[in-house]
Length: 259
Image: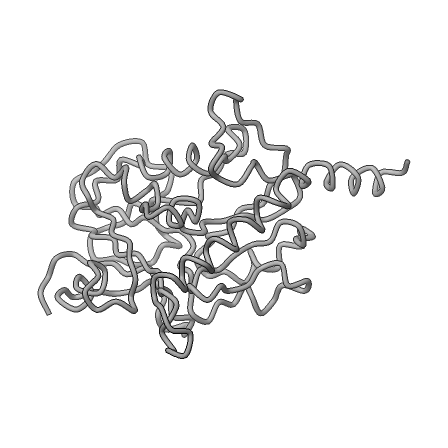
């Protein structure tokens, strides 16, 4: 067996456990959307999931990052989380100059968590040559690891550096595997935040929201004007990173200033 054939064979073997599981979660996500919103003739029958992060509460502790790794069966040897936290001078929004390797929290800086923005007009979807990344009716941008060929064009297209490539086979201790989440993804594919669908379909919030010690994160449905995220955006000055690009990100930042 030549190297290419061996690689293809190993990838198929590694991806086999997630084939059925991925379909199950996708079906549950769609079913939940219809059940929550009712009549399919309504344009807003699906929830439009979004997140609000209050920067006045974020203390840069990175607990959201560590919680994300454990919740989503990310390889302990992979060297990444779906979330990055950048230290920046207060008022500065350019994450390209942010420090994600800070070792202690400093006064005079604010901390901006960044993950997949679940854009309404996602550039990653447009460049994927095999349709492995696409947008669900809920607005969540999904990655189908069964189709992904590891070309990383989506990573190049993402202005938030929110996608991760599995360079090596992920290792997760058996006693730390989360049976409810997708099994560890194989080497050679791209992965990212998908708003913990295995939790949302059970009426739970994404793990990063639950674990934040200061309550800086909020999750909900923008199509529901009474949802917490809708009210926070309406009642506070909010912004989204790199709005000028026109991709319509759905993670909003506030600092508890009234409009």
